[in-house]
Image 1 (cartoon, rainbow, N blue to C red):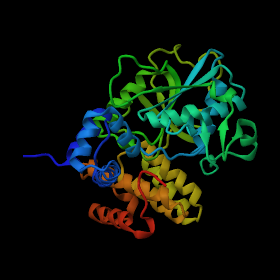
Image 2 (spheres, rainbow, N blue to C red; image 1 turned 135 degrees about the horizontal axis):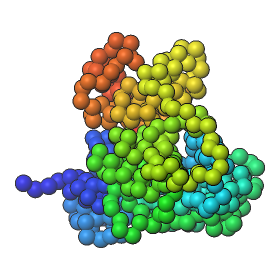
Image 3 (tube, rainbow, N blue to C red; image 1 turned 180 degrees about the vertical axis):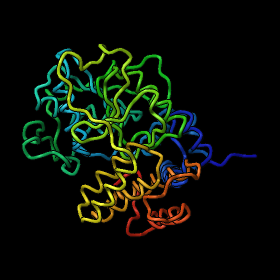
Image 4 (cartoon, rainbow, N blue to C red; image 1 turned 120 degrees about the vertical axis):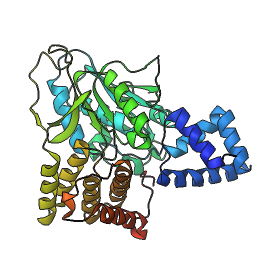
Length: 386
């Protein structure tokens, strides 16, 4: 039985980059394959053969599949939390790793923050599976549209004009080390030193369950005991309690690496930031419901988002997050949350607690997700592409 070009391409991307082929992503992959074959002027089957045999063609397709859309200081609460951790760290050299750095806005945001708070003993490592993304990060050049999240003061201090756009000033670029890394595959020449903090946001959502779990294990192997991991709200890492415990720092939920020994934390030697146990899932869902009922959509989004961090496999939490984001007018992020709800349902065993939906059944939830994802008013890529 012959394999279709789409199936063949999906296998190549899974085996070489660890990227999953869920129904929504398969539809997008099919469109990208057709567009790329048309641009190359060859039949679809011939183009997939090029992708299989020519590294440059595979890298080009991978660049298109892994959307590099981002902004500076995205999810500001996590940067506030990281600043608190960095200030409390010992004076020894420390590393923060941006795993899946995209076009560079995240690692440069981290470098800006470290400069602002005077933590000169830290340096930033930026990695990505996409060579195109790494090249853009290396150049550090951005259009006006790509500067979202940067204040006027930060633009004036850390950017300078270049042509019709801007570039990161050399003094900041020198503090960001850039390297290629595929989290989905074991690499005997791991390029990242042991880190005190890792930002791996909206990366795991591209992976299948096995690849996601393997990535978490590899990340855990590069985080010093007591160090912290920040994930994106669309990520679904699965069980993490073998390596991490959920905690809140400065109001943001993240994951702390379980300590192997009491005195081996990179934050030893100075007073630790206040960290309190994370609230439970039902409490966060109730908090979000109450905030939404009171018209405080920002608080509702925060509570539902923290619920998805606490248990990334609960569809209700993602759906409620999507509903709150939709009411707040953020349709792009709402659609991402609804898509994550659908993926969580597909991974579930059918026994999910739906108390957060006021008596609705699992089938009702599945239908509601489908309606949201097919709503023409929200018809934009789940991946966040412009």
